[in-house]
Structure formats: C-alpha cells, structure tokens
Length: 243
Ligand SMILES: [Zn+2]
Image: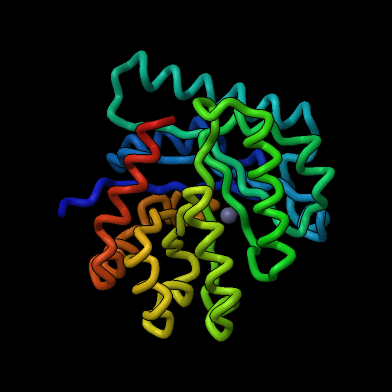
C-alpha cells in the first residue's frame, strides 16, 4: 500500500506551537504533504497555566476564521493539500467549560488528550453523547485519541472492553503519534491486535510544535505495516470523506 503523506496533529501559535497557520501550510505544501490538521490546545486544567491555549471565545473564533481562510485558499488554488480544522481537548478540563466553549460543528476533528482513567472515559463519552443530541449527524466531527497510552488499559479486561465499546460506538480513532513512540511499541502488541480485530480506525499525527517534525511520519508508517493495520488506516479515510 502507498501511504498518503499525512499529519493530523499539529500545533500553531494559537496554542503552544511556534509558527502561524500560514507558515505551517506553506511548509506543508513544500513537503508535499497531502492531509494536515491543525489541532491547538483547549484546556482549563493545570495545562492552561503552563502553556497558551484556545482560552477565550474571541481567540477560538479567530482561530476558526483563519483556518477557514486557508482551507478556501487551498481549494481556490487547486492545491492537493487538504487542511482540516481540529482542536485538542484536555480531558482534565471541566465538563461545563468544554460544553460551554466548544461547538462541535465548527470542527472537522476533535482530539481528546489524557484519556487515562475511567472518569476521563466517562467524560469523553458524555460529551459525545451530549453533542450527538444537539448537532445534526451530517455536521458532526471526527473524534480521535491523542497520544493514547495503551498501558492505562493493559491489565484490566473490563476496562479494556469499556474502552473498545467507546471507540466502536462513536467511531473514535487511535493516533500513531511519533512524538510518543513508546505508545505504539511492541510491548502493546496485544492492544494493536485488538484494534485490528475490531477494525478501529487509525491515523498518524506528529504532534509538531515547529516545522522540523511536520513530516516525521516514517516510523508510524513502519509500525502500522508491522501490525498490519493498513485497513484500519483506510477506514479513517472513509470517515474523513463523510465530513
Ligand atoms: Zn498535541
């Protein structure tokens, strides 16, 4: 299989990234990337004290307008690069804050980070169900787990079942994140066997904060091949097409 050149996890100056969306898009074109998503941070936990985040409605609106502008420009110029509007939600944030600030219709992709506990899983599940009741299915985004560590679910079969139920019922995808190679290492082989069996969509993100790691996806591709997850990768693109 020929892998498309993708990076579905990128940070810009709207949170803790070092470059503007304009510069990222320009470099992605130069690198001949085919699909990218900008996924800046959203949080009201400890994290927002330490790094810049999408912290006000005004900043979020500006972020979305900028992304829309670049999406349009790429289309008008007939470029082969597809740009997606994403956001990375810290599951340590409060439920009210997320519900009040995030309109899922505004995004193509919503990433959840720090899914480590049963409470985190319950919150992610509650949010998606809450949004499903309010948003028509044809303007619903894709959901993914950012740099998910399978270790948190490795020793407890019941927890693992709950996790897979969640992934399947909302078509939530798993991200091969090259910034955290230990999360797709061979010690988690059983987890990846189950991903394959259950046909959970997967994709690749580099979690880049600069320009240097924008195309740092060769190791994830090797690991996807090693685990024979090519069909899971294709199923992600099937979901993407429905956006
Ligand atoms: Zn990130």
